[in-house]
Amino acid sequence: MLSAPNGLSWVDAGVWFAAIVVVSFAVSWLATDIARMRQAPYVALLTVVTGALAVGYLVWTGTDPWTALVHNAGWGILAGVVVIVPLLRGIARLPATTPLSRRRSVKAWAWEGVVYGIAEGALLSALPALVVWQAADAAGWVGGWASQVGVGARALAGSVVVIVTHHLGYWDFRNRQMLTAIAACGALTVAYLTTGSVLAPVIGHALLHVAAVVHGVPLPPHQRPSTAAAVQPERHTVPV
Image (tube, rainbow, N blue to C red):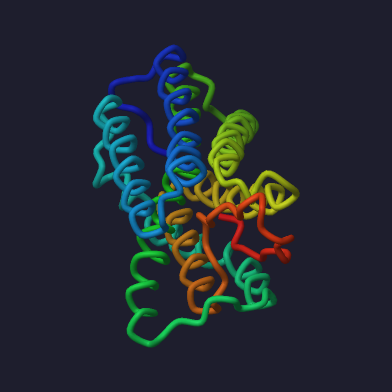
């Protein structure tokens, strides 16, 4: 994992982490549950917000964005693909509900799959884990294998906090589907912490979204059904 050239105090780290938690919930809850924004503009909003947070944090800590992107790139790509394989099998078993035309599928793969997946991979797995790790490193907590495992566990816990708060913004994840979201996104965080490459979670997340689009499994956000509507059938959705 990369160190923060400008250093990072626990106070600064706490402010940045709190901002990530608040924004991760606000963007999903306000945009989808309150404003009922459709998926295309929501993906654009999420991407802009995630990009602003990531660039702002990297500039603040003096971490070069290009270095952060290419660091251990080969291992990151490999880890992202390996971790995602069992999740792809799970998607393949879900019933398809949104068949797409050939023309629309190409657009969906790019927007709902790649762009949406990269944004969530960075927001949920990479950014919160990086904040915790760099703060611990600046404090001198990162040394041998034992200390690295301990810091990694804290970074994973920080990522899980963001995963949970973000998915609480989606009305249909306020149930046992949350556990699946934690497991799937948490596995990608572990891939990031193991390799130190941001490509692990963003590529893995993008592949997961693309697989959902190809298979016809709906990605969030989903419009909340009217309380006056008839009982809705069980919805199967990708938990990321």
